Image (tube, rainbow, N blue to C red; front, side, top):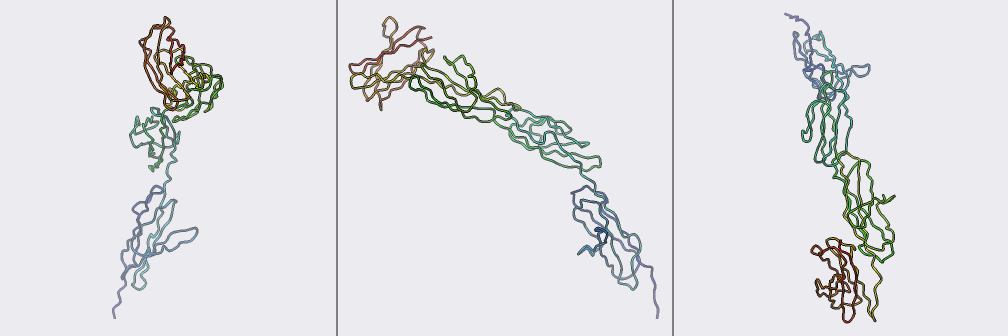
Length: 359
């Protein structure tokens, strides 16, 4: 009987990466047995707390760890089926997990108006890259200036001193420029008040609303204390013009939004001639380029309009008919000289005349 004695197997272990950044994929551990006899047997273990614990299913010569967030120790128990073949040698190793840099920016997000820009400064990195490049003055380094034309989320990748990198997102919201519209009646009974309403859009930052008034639609003055979304006019005795401004402090939110112009005219109570009521209103008065004519009647009938000057000279004449008791028209005054004019309306044997001034 011949018995052969061989040296015990010797195990050595290594890792594809001993040092890697937190959050990345794991590393592959490999064991190598030399010497001995028989079939190789492996069991990988992880040091958890104060105990080496078998890793379920890790029984081959190599083992790929999951992602690791903290420093961890691994070892392999190796042997062979040959009698007494227990491996010796170095069978453990340490995996070092490198911390990611604490990358952050100022600001972490921003809102601007169309055409505005925002300076973004990054911290705690040795190098930076930005994407997408749309609206950026630079795609590397810090700070950068972002001028996107639409809402954009920028990705910043910062590298730390240990070579690990971290990516964060910086959303930049782009709002439309400040806008405002106002609504309200164009005519009200003379000597009464009315409520005008404003609707705002766009803008960012601190936004304020300011109502303004004008007697001629050209020269405007802010109304003290009129900064709410609604405004109650004083008693209207003639044509008065209103508009509103919407101002926002956000980047790129200038100039202020200017609303449409709304003219409000005080209309006299209808004049009764016999059994019928009539009302003729001319506005604006004084007028410059165009004159608005509003005729109210208690019934539908033909009306003859005549425009004359101070000397009684007839300038123009036309016929019309009220519908549902109303007739409304706007005429051009561009060919008239400055001065006083009269507009008369004849309905049957009744005549109404109103005076207006061309400036």
